[in-house]
Image (cartoon, rainbow, N blue to C red):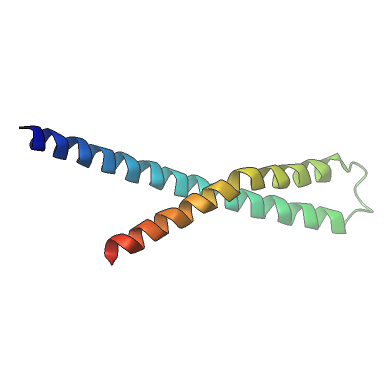
Amino acid sequence: MISTATAIVWDSALSQGETLGAIAVAILIILLIAKELLSSYESEKSEKMEEIKDTSVIVKAKTIVRNLNVIVYPLLFLFALIVCIKIIEVL
């Protein structure tokens, strides 16, 4: 009886962990795409600086890209950890 309950709790915890890992990877992908788009927007606009009178847009894009790094680095670490765990499971 106890072993059955333990197995059910263990399977539930594993599925929750896998779900959270998948959500974290999806968030990482979305943030990396946003970071790349913002950095390309910023570089495109800085090349055409003569035409732009309002530089606040460029400053905002740079600030957002720097702030995205704060979120992306821990998620990259988590992704690397998930990959290592999956490799160890296979071996």
